[in-house]
Image (cartoon, rainbow, N blue to C red):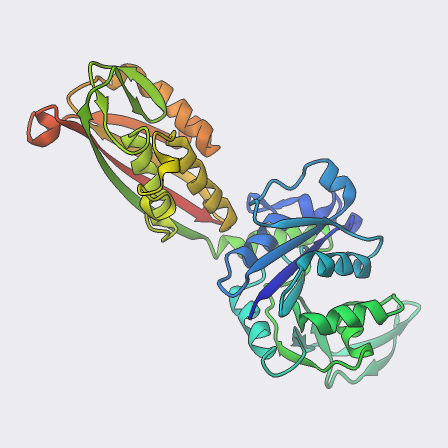
Length: 376
């Protein structure tokens, strides 16, 4: 069974203020779109993600997220955008439709919607109303209303794909959400518990609320990397992206950049994604002699796709020769460029092993690295 997710982000969101549509404004250092997309690309139950954007936003290149996210143009209203997303999803047994304006959707809520689709053609999260309800007229209370059985609707709203496609094709328009479209087609929609944190950002003050919620849920990860390469014939060594003249070179399937390999493995480790060999097997001839920045860039792309950001990379090179000090600043700049970080967030330093062991005998170079990731 395949499950797709559609993230609807084609609106203009003017009530939120700011100089751009609200979905492109940031909370906790990431746009609402990026956060909403990451909630689904990192979910193990989701096989495919389609992002629906306004044509102007696509033309402006505002989305720079992972390539595996399919992007399609939205319609003139939300229903039109959902229909566009349903067309772009392709073959999928079930589909979840989510508003980018809800960037803090928890994985457990997504799980609940997916699980409910085993027993109904539609499912959606909601919160039962707890406050008293008034009717008003001319700024005065004119009456009360019974709140029994009333809910505040949320997204993602999940459906059997063929059923919701047919429902949208038959609907005349003007629906408040996809549940209304589904019910108009006679589809049963199960209610699953929503989450107060999964609120819709609508007004400027909502950004402050979201920032506050993120402050108490920061996820910090760290990973370690270690790599070794021996010396062999050559006239230079590649270390942290910089070619350093030397009377020998480092041997390896790629360019044998031991420092960059250790940093890459540290990032993979923080994500629990194995090591370089898992993503770029040495048995694959296409990686023979490859520049190691390919590996580091891939690891950094995974960080962004998982909703994290790198806050610091620290690399220690262990060798007698060549001398690292004269090249450390260049290495720092090159590593920060590849990782998309400020130079001050990358550290490259060196030490010797006091002429002990294989590095002390000048047989090769070792590297250790630590990477720190944060999901604010």
